[in-house]
Length: 163
Image (cartoon, rainbow, N blue to C red):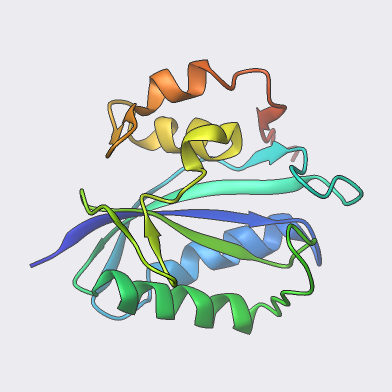
């Protein structure tokens, strides 16, 4: 049995656009997992610790046979391979992978909260999420589009590729 899971990606160090694009490709190679859709890349201003570069963000939809904890293990291993260091809260990072949704599961443990506890407050998550799942509902929060309406003022723009 597989579950639809959504993963938020973000980076603002070491060529963040490349970090996110490589991570999107790598998500599709996780065990017992298929990448079924991916958003455009988005630029966003940092939240929390503001003295850092802007972020490149995206959201991916996966179909996975991994458990939520197993998927989290794989995401954290992928972050490590990209040189992720956790020096302080909201620090700049080479790659951040957040398990946003795992089916309809709702839980709060020391290690994992589902849905992601702040996703409904972040335009940089909601805009790319709605791009690939326009009718999605966040369990316990309601339609993602209604959540975004409350946070439209947060700077987050679709990345324009220049060739």
